[in-house]
Structure formats: structure tokens, C-alpha cells
Image 1 (cartoon, rainbow, N blue to C red):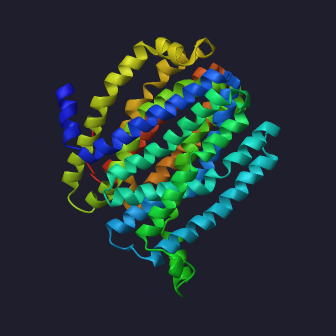
Image 2 (tube, rainbow, N blue to C red):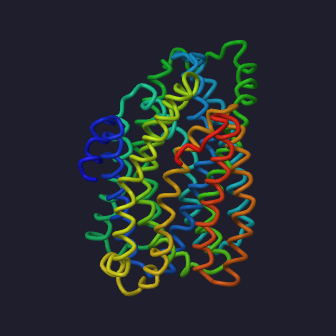
Image 3 (cartoon, rainbow, N blue to C red):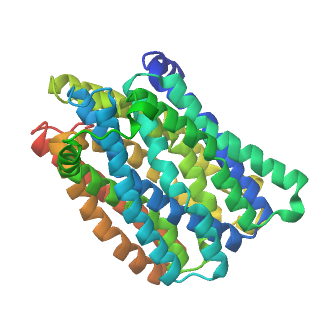
Length: 430
């Protein structure tokens, strides 16, 4: 098994670079989460991360599927490295930013928020404009196969966040509260944001001399881009609603305490999902390129990726399952001991997510993400009612079981779509 994994890594060096960066990033991110859990009660921990999840939902919605749209167009040699196309993307980001900020502030003013929630959400509002540029720069680095730089950018945000948190805990502990931690989380993205701006402007050759010059047909091109992006946009909305509703439903239908207990175990799952993240960062552009050529080769490429990820992740999942109580106790302490029961169940979602990630990357290439949008619409429509239903009967455990059920359902839908509209006959992983 170990020799096979080493061989698979050596044959996927770009994946290795991205995975190393994400692994280091995940360690720092997880360390930051543990540091906060150790210094706050479960209800405070749950309140903070549920609000961060809400803010990141809007931030990721503002990405609007642009990175995937960009990869598709560049793989077809439609988008060029000039300021004209860069300014179209800038206009798209500004347009969606105005829309999402409107909805975000409506939630702040009229949602079920107390004064502390409102203040934290105000602080997190900066992330809504930072995130699109950070994600776009990652896509551009991937397109240019600059995987080392991509790894560094992934690592930088969490490094800055961890260092600022350590500084706050060790030297300014009397100022350690949720508001100041919120400032730390935003401050850690400022430098990566400006780096991302530089990458974006440099890639499209935008400078002061041409920044304010808008060509005659740019509004028509903007309209055409908005039409072409509609399924990437819709799929992006549904995806981030899908992944963000877990902790939000738990917060608003149970309590901040339950949200804290859930996130303590879920943060471990997020760390193990770095293999999925590495797959997206490394291979999403390759799926766009390979989908236009030999489908049999693509099938082999897809199967190898899935087997590679399962060989790495399954031994880790087995270890976490048997030692969940010890892991939670060492990391979080007695206040979070109920999280071990959640972790024992939730760990089984990892292999499902790894397969689903690869299948979804292929589905996205079909008809400009139309079928992926349909799949996301179906499972998102089922997820929230199912979570609420199972919560009403089984409390927090019900929410966890609903996540696994939905992931299996999503996998079945993706497999059906690929068999019917891409490969037609046999299953990919069976």
C-alpha cells in the first residue's frame, strides 16, 4: 500500500506540490481552530464559526463560478492575456459584489442577530470583496501550471492568521474576545488579497495607462459573458449554499453550543478534505482540456485520480474512527467530548466526497456546467428539509446522518449524469 501511494505521488508531481501546500495550510488552519476552541466555550466557538461560515457563503457566492468559466474559455483559446478580457472579469466581479453586499446587509439588519452577531458580520464583510480575487488568482496560477506559487498562496492566508492569533493569545490575552478574533481573520487576508490583485492585473496586462480605457464593445462582451456564465454561476450558488448550510441550520435550529460541538469534529473532516481541494486546484483545468479529446483516456485519468485519493484517505479514516475519543480529548478537552460521537459518524463522508469531487469536475465540463447545476439544485433542495426533519427527531446526530445520506444521493446523481451524457454505458469507479 505504502509503495503504491509513493508511486502515485511521484507520477503526480503537480498534485504533490499543491497537496504539500494545502497540507501545511490545513495544519495551520486546524491549529487556529483548536487554539480558539481551547480559549472559548463551545457556544462561543459555535457562534464565531457559524457567522464566519455565513460571511464566507456570501464571499464564495461572489466568486460566481468565474474561475471555472475562465478555465473553460482559456482551454478553448477564447480568452486572451490582454486588458480587454481582464476588465470584463472586473466588471463581472463589481456587479456581483453590489448584489451580494445588498443581500448580506439585509441579513445583518433583518436576520435573527443580536448586537454581537451584527458587529462580527460587519467585520467579516470585507471578505466578500477579497475572496473573488484570491480564487481567481489561484485559477490563473493553475492554468499557467505554477503549482509552487499556488501552494504558497494557499499557505500564506493560514500562516498569517495563525501567527496573529498566537500573538493575540500570548501577548494580549486580556483583549482575547470574538470581535478581536474576527479582526484577525480579516487582517490575515489583506496581504493575499493584494498579491491576488497583482497576479490578476499582471496576467491580463492591466496597468494605469489602460485601466480606465473601456473599449466600445465591452458592454456587449460583458452581456455575452453573463449569459455564458449562467450555469457556472448557478452551480456556484447552489454548491456554496450546499456546503454552508450544515453549521447554519444547526445554529439556527438547535443552538450555538451544538454548532460548536459540530464544528469541532467537522474541522477535522475539513482538514482531511484537503485531498479534494488539491484535486480541484490541480486537475480541474485538466478535465476541461481532456474532455475535448479521447473519452477513454479521460476515463482512465478519472479512475486513477479516484483510486489515488481513496488509497490515501481510507487508512486515515479508519484511524480517526477508532481513536476519535482520544483525538477529541487531546485537541479540544472535556468540554467537547460529545464531538467524538459526531466524528465517528462524520468520518465516513470523506471517501464519498473524494469520489464526488472528481465526478463533479467532469460533470462541470458538460454543457457549461448545466448538469452540475441540475445535480446541485436537486440535492440542495433535499438537504435543508432533510436536516431539519432528522434534527427534530434525533437532535445533532440526525443532522450528521442527513449529511451522509445527501452525499450518497449526490454521488448517485453524478454517476447517472456521466453514464448517460458522457460515457453512456459503464460506471466509472466500478
